[in-house]
Image 1 (cartoon, rainbow, N blue to C red):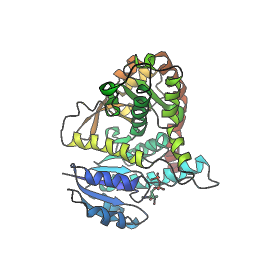
Image 2: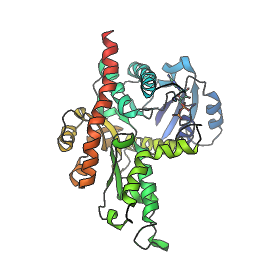
Image 3: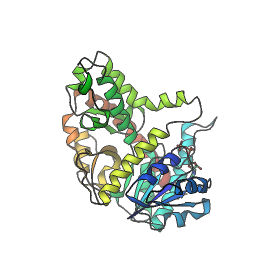
Image 4: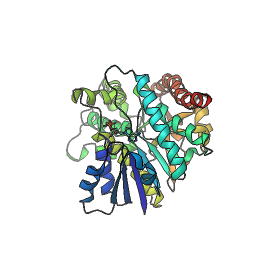
Length: 347
Ligand code: ADP
């Protein structure tokens, strides 16, 4: 059985994510760590009669929290405070990511590390470079979770299709739970770097005029809808927790050697040069400089065995344009993360 550690377990995402993981049949130990003591969450969850045994660890107990962990999920970070720029936020969260990864390298170097903290586009490179700096060059176990973009695409597309040109009555309704056969999302995890891709291209022609463009915009900027609705009280937490859980469960199923067939290959934001078929993906995306990208991944035993590049062969002209627009931004985002570690090393 598997021990999963959640770093940042007291947060808006960490708490509901921990609840969902407590319900998972694949988790035997759930280790909750936060700099804000997560023992309340842990005791509360421990009263649920499911398999996972909960343990909480306060700020000075990271080593104990990580001991024996097979999977580490990281939603830890700080929200943007008044007067703080995005760059300030990056620096704080990059320091947190570096600090957590330095401990993971020491305590559970073989764990699979799944990153939720933002900006994902830059923090996954921070994690990869921290591991490299400590002698571990293994891109197969470090992934940025972009599943919320996929979840939103599935939900919104289902909504649009149920209100489209085609008659959808009774059993003809589109089932949102099955939309992974219809749509995927590649690229990065912010704004224009998020690229919804139609797996069934005729869907676009079934939409009413303007619906396709508005669908793309909603997937790319869906986070803003939540921030606005929460009126300054935070960003997406429940939907992110669900998305994180769906991805962690995908990884856990592969650790249990369960069939992933039927789930589709879920994309993750990964370091292409370190992965099988990664250079093929770079070639198809037209840039060797582009090292980080979210693509469907094939997992074996909780690690990426290869990236699946077939999705890149079937892009429409509009999807190709979105890729072209995203590539320079993704390159810059990744460089920012890499520089953070390299420049610190020179000091
Ligand atoms: P979100 O809505 O993204 O979950 P929150 O601010 O609610 O944002 O949650 C982030 C969590 O990360 C907080 O509980 C915070 O205490 C935690 N955190 C911040 N720094 C660290 C750290 N170095 N290690 C572990 N947890 C951290």
